[in-house]
Image (cartoon, rainbow, N blue to C red; front, side):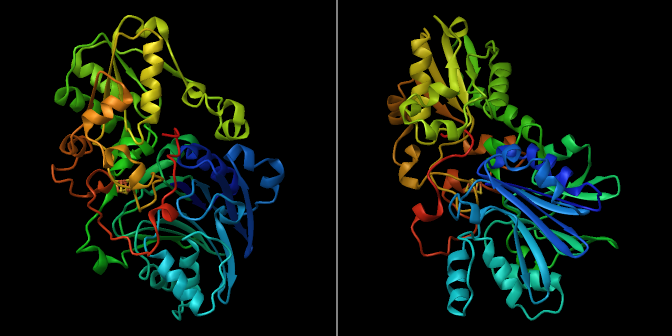
Length: 470
Ligand code: SF4
């Protein structure tokens, strides 16, 4: 999963891109990068780690220009290494081009093998690079046509921002798996994975980029195209429901809906579907919080912060110190004894992936005196891996792929475990009961775009969830 940002027509494009990426930091913490253009020249700075770790004054001094694109990355294809840090920037027969991508191409491996067979040499192990190779070998006269020709040859999930010497191009795949929004900042146009970027830079939100839409911004203004219309018609929108469940920031508007409200509704619906007698409702801090509020409001059970999250434990810190790694969840979360001691506690979380984190949370709460611990998950059981750009474990590691709910409850050692129904989740995000308009494959196994590369899951889908190590 990644966050992407673009701006065109602003004298401080790099500074604004920095702020935009900062607001998208929850979408990727492995690397951050910005590319700008000025007078036909490209300037690129990328670094490993957080946005704040990758950019200082020296970097900004080297990023002049009125156009910029940027990315924060969490790898799903291609390892976490400097050569895969985006945006990528290339020079080819028709000039220069830079690209930043959010999503996963499901046929990238096959396309890459064909390209390599024809002599292409790749600089990275990222799926994004195949788009540029396809664009470079196209015989179309204009960049835009070459890009469309390239994108017609790839399938899967992509929201893109690209920068040429004179244009910024924003694209969303025909299914619209990943979000991409457009806004205005004075005379400049801005693009971002989520609207929370616009709030920070005080840009006006205009609208979402539509599935299959290509938007081009240059000094001549803004143009919009639907070059994939023929492809799109039989393949309706499939926005990732997991963006609402877990990934997007709660203050963002994605797919036309407030993420916060969607999560609160999920909690509300969860309390209707699976009530329990208890003394207190507590969230797992982070994305589970609005759902816990919704659960508390619907059930009438008091809401309290029974778990406190430390904001100062970075992944690097844990990875560097072997001796403290086994403290794991305890480093991030600690129970509030005065809230849970002697109480029947409902813990609301947004997902239960391997079960190991939930098990530790239950143990912690019992250690702090909780009399009963009832776990409520504001989404259905995660039974399948994602091929479209969310960093989920392989299927064999997903506990719900091979265990019934009661078996999971025994493993987690909670007094009861219940999940929100698929129907409840879809209604909470404004869909119909069939889930039209959304992808929910990690809950159903019904994949809207078949995975075409002939490689094992483990190569494509890495083994961790990016935000909380679940
Ligand atoms: Fe989102 Fe799940 Fe579909 Fe992946 S499989 S796009 S995480 S809903």
